[in-house]
Length: 340
Image (tube, rainbow, N blue to C red):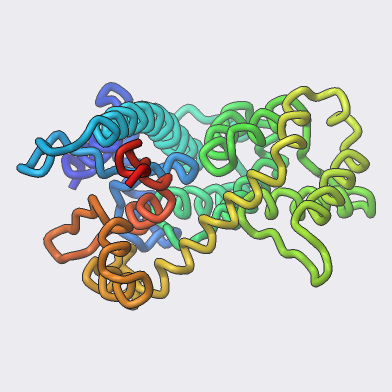
């Protein structure tokens, strides 16, 4: 089992030098404890790196010879995008997995040589156990729910007292929120540590804004997304005055609507996936998708929509692959085709 666990960690991008016998033993005992019941998954993918199109293939068929210049240009551009996404995801996955292992070590660190001041209290251990379980195993939690767990852990006294815990939690936070928002958390202290009336209002305002940026923007009747977000932005600046001098916040404020709507799009796509995934496997049957698309769009358009989809041995594709298909930019047409 130890060898299998080590291979799985290596396959997820963690160098073998990071995986000591002690780390494996602690992680195994941790992950098989009452805190976690799901089997170890090898799909440690960061949510914001999750939706790139994975269908670039070096395999060619007889039709590739007839591709025109526009299609070849698109394919080359797509190949570069995929390579960049692979590289970014690899680095982030390695950092995320390393941080989770470090958190597991700290949690089980009633270890030899630990002083009482160097151990975490029971509440902190429980919160971190739950967080690591969700990040490594539970694919059903929305980005907003994941953020809630990370933020709650960051606000614990133990995280404030232990620099290593705080550093690891910030790595986890980076995997959950868009890069622009992470830069704000790096630059300004947005952690609400108290329970007085002002602190509770600060937390409420922060959660409203963050949930909207992570796909859970709720717009009352008669208002637009832009109007709601502008109120959230002003509330944030009122509750956290330090944002006024934060360059990273200026970027967030400028792109708040775009980020929120893009996150909402992927939240809708996730719900679409769930509708097709009756068995809750994290995958959908390509045949069902094709049949539905043909009825809604016609055979020709549905063929273009699902072009490049490669099912596994069970005839299924993962949620991320479906999202990538549905969010591809429209195909460019050649000048000759447009003039006909």
